[in-house]
Length: 250
Image (cartoon, rainbow, N blue to C red):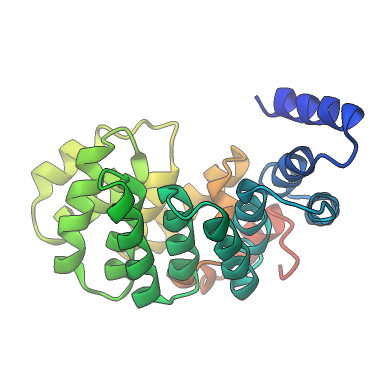
């Protein structure tokens, strides 16, 4: 799908060379798929040169470029612009909550996620963000109800299911945890990063992370600088993974 998306974006630029959405899409592909940060920077520079930017360009710039590089203050500002343009969009609020989470601003993250849920109480990503906020603070009991709801609303989402499976395992509910794990396809190792991380199984988490990078799954770069990944970045194995993503600070 990436080659098709890239080709369509280039066709759009042939028609309108300054098209901000097309430049933003190419910037996202360069960052999260190609790990080409210089090209991503250039595409977002071209996207932001437009007089008026749609909210998804602000959000994409934050998600695909600023957050992966740990530039959280700038990402928060970009996402605030998206929210200002479309304040009733639950996704923008939820994505902003994720920025606060990555920056370890947990109270702000929870408050922003709750705003998303005021708009759409079934927004599973917001439930998962709140769960991870509590997990990151070591508040596993508080995290559980949010993880339960995230998994109930989106049983097909490996991340939310992994949160719950890890919490159940830590609480001694091995059978239910194993049953949940069995629902995560082996081809989707991203959820297992969180499962092993929550259980402090650092090498296993790093194994899954490397596989996610090799598969060019966007989540690999998107969460590379997140505060909750500090245990992985403290490993002597991390520099190799950072180099695989061509991260500037590698």
